[in-house]
Length: 412
Ligand code: NDP
Ligand code: MG
Image (cartoon, rainbow, N blue to C red):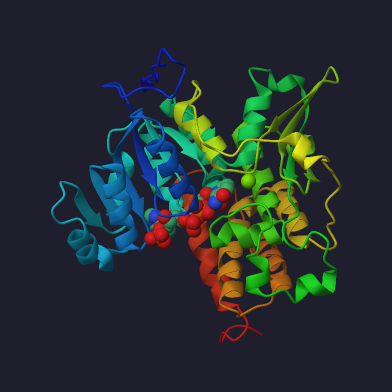
């Protein structure tokens, strides 16, 4: 098993001090929302971390800037056409540059103690899995990894003798609330959902929502894909699937509550009637810091929770009529047979089409549901045993969903 470098506590109890034993980090998705929050944590940790590699998608300048800011040794861009820009932006530094999907895998495999998986979408599956197979501890933000290929990821984590630490705020809260309790003593795990910008909207208003309205999340500032997922509660569906694999718990013991204040992120109800909850201000720096230094605690400047200022916490059942995407995702999890993989792929295509104004908001859930139904009826649906099988299903479903989008020749 990979040796975990323990962060050394300083005598003052302040943030860990600069240390030859600093924890080496690889940051996948360094230019995104989670990536930037991770940079803030690393920069504020007083030398507790050193950065082996950073990786991004297509923004060469932003990736070079973050590599320089962190003093990374290696910077990898997924888009090969950005190589010259990346190289130019890193000239005069000792940072190695590379581009192309294989370069991102190389970044993932650079020797490190922990790899932050913060690439958006299924693009994160292959590099995150490569790091896991190499025995790295993964701080996992990318929920699509588990939705697309949950069984393969969890089997590989066990085989590699390492673990996936959940960055997703709900799962991080549940992970902390669970402590070292036996799974058999857990009666119910509840994930909360803010309800997003359409929490109080009518079915008709939601159906006609524009990308700008869907991107205006009331509590969280996130990348576009997860923000659109949140607006329709598809994100909560993906997160229930993520929790199912991550905690090894069946669907019947997973629940969702809408909680507009985004203060209680997750709850664990035990067989003796006790309930533990994970609370924090809605700031992703909290779970990121928790994972990066686990099992120790960092001192951070993340937002603090002021319950008296918030005054009231409210909880309500999700409305499947106004938010059908949540039902579609839960149905996919219950059906099994690879439907979570199908759901994830179709959803990525549908979200992209919505952001490009090719489909309306309510068509996202419809397109995803149709993809799941088609996969069940034509026999494509089967539980992917390996990462390659999961990615093959992902590819096939993307092609088919794209071909069926309105305005495409095959669409009818
Ligand atoms: P963003 O869209 O803000 O960032 C995505 C990052 O991935 C960018 O750095 C992007 O690079 C990079 N990227 C895209 N494609 C590739 C690729 N093929 N190879 C390498 N890097 C790539 O997303 P978020 O930070 O919001 O989300 C990241 C993940 O974390 C998602 O899975 C999301 O669901 C999850 N998550 C996010 C939360 C949040 O608060 N943001 C909360 C909980 C989970 P470039 O900039 O060049 O495009
Ligand atoms: Mg979440």
